[in-house]
Image (cartoon, rainbow, N blue to C red; front, side, top):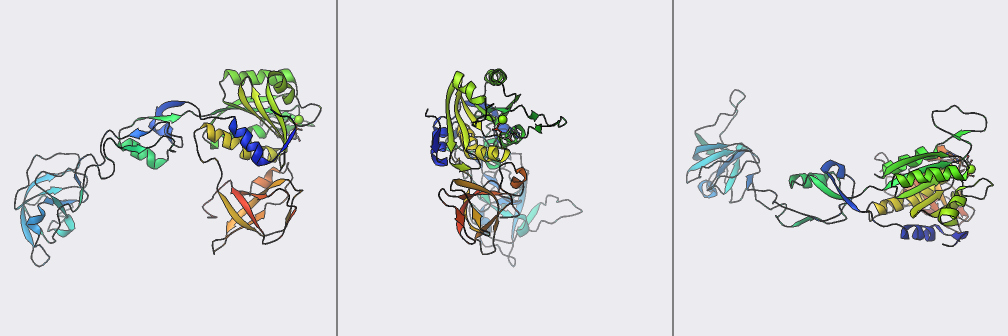
Length: 421
Ligand code: AMP
Ligand code: MG
């Protein structure tokens, strides 16, 4: 892999994604399949509905018996059965008879339609609906009315979901109705998270002079969890090669599919990550022409892909968004790796140094439907709070230094909150 290349974000992303493939599959209990990707097609073993049943509470009858029924000229039928959901009636509906039937109950033989209870003389009496001996029908129905036929939704033997489909609550419901209790899905990517730096202390520790809390590991772990992947904490490595090595070995033992580290990849005197990767892996240190961001190490450690993000928290988060997120989604079997992108009209003048710039921004939708954006204030790569208000990263393209009010830019929606859209 070439070293010290100056790459565009697009070039770097292409190279990163080439290094990842969809992971192997596993079978998990149905609810654990939520938000995961189906690894093989699911074929229906039964039809949906599995049997003809009533779509209303009413009376199962022969449509021809009530062809002339109306409010003025009701038709009387003898009630021969009461069929609740979950029960099966052996009764045969002959001329002049009907069976009371509840929603979801199987149609009795001989009946070819259901008339809803509202169109009959049946009424509530003393808070119970007593089964009448005879019922008056006030409306005509046609054969097939208010019957849900077997296979209308899904036919037995048909493919219901293709491999690669993302399982949302509605897919979970369909799988449950088909009796698929164990779902074949792509394995969750396991991502090792390593912080590096002598200045870092853990979140529960007191700050001493010269130290800061390790925020990157938490932010990245949260990003990993949000993607449905599995984080593996590798702690904080000191700016010391043997410590970095020991922690990466722990990651190998834990079977990670990807290492993500922050800091230690630029040109400082103590940037040890690259020394370790050079010795025991394969590495490309790139300057990606992006802001925030710039240093990004990509390679592998003992055959496991490795993404070394910059240390500055905002750069680390944006680089994760741009490179780690799509890589993790690709391993998880997702096909759509990109955030939704909308065109926004800038509400303020913004500037860049000519690198592709990711402005932390608030995108709102104006009443006419167009999207507008303004930045969330100071854009320094150490200003973590610039991400708190942001629901988008607005991209100033490479080569553009000044953007005037009203000019249009693309916004990557990192969040799509209901109160904005
Ligand atoms: P470096 O890449 O090591 O030069 O780090 C760049 C900046 O990011 C420095 O100001 C570091 O203190 C800061 N930094 C590095 N790692 C972390 C971390 N895990 N959490 C918060 N800030 C960090
Ligand atoms: Mg450092």
